[in-house]
Image 1: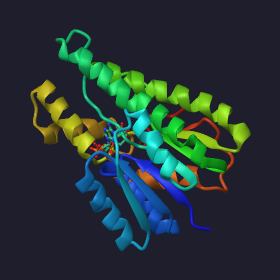
Image 2: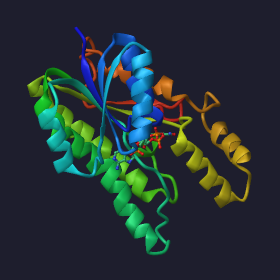
Image 3: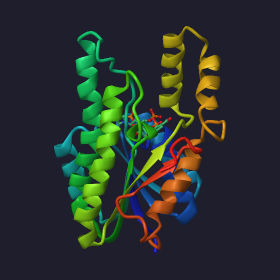
Length: 252
Ligand SMILES: NC(=O)c1ccc[n+]([C@@H]2O[C@H](COP(=O)([O-])OP(=O)(O)OC[C@H]3O[C@@H](n4cnc5c(N)ncnc54)[C@H](OP(=O)(O)O)[C@@H]3O)[C@@H](O)[C@H]2O)c1
């Protein structure tokens, strides 16, 4: 049976790769959410080329009423993947802009997935699957990344609570914690790291790769494989768990 799967952050990076992977693998109908209409249309085109169906919807995950309005127009869903997110640094000794950035990161990276689950829960039934995209920064702290670490640690707490809350409805909730993945967000992170250390982006990337036991960044398609496994209806083992997709950085 063809599944209908909603993905936030489908315009770029990991969300885009997940949407294409699922459409290609099982001809799923993909509901694509993001703010950049042109980029969403590009993802939709790639899905159709791969033989799948795609329905793009422009929306901001901070806007619960907009998400709810969309949910009321959508058919039943089999699964949702909350991949929308933003990065960035918020040094605690920084200027006033750090306060705005702190709130913005929490709003997109933690309240966003909460809004997404709240809005689309009525569309999910028994057997439904939810995957929230966290990060290795939900597992440990990194100086200067207070907001992002707080949001991603919070997201893992949310995953555990929702998993037990929704299991009686037959809905399975889990998370993934990617390490470095080759996307726009990672490129911005490397540029920031290079600026902070006074080195080139190439040197910063080498330093980042050196702390990954397998010695490299991952491709969005590799993260999509892991998410696909959690979304598999045959998989009823994972409940409130976080799958590390990081090449050995975190071993719990
Ligand atoms: N790349 C990494 O190394 C890495 C590592 C660990 C975890 N992650 C996590 O993986 C997820 C995807 O990141 P990525 O690397 O694929 O980043 P990316 O390439 O920058 O893509 C981010 C996606 O989030 C969407 N988005 C951002 N703000 C949004 C908003 N307010 N409302 C709706 N959509 C919004 C963007 O779409 P629009 O611009 O169209 O709105 C875009 O599709 C994030 O949650 C990130 O924290 C990434």
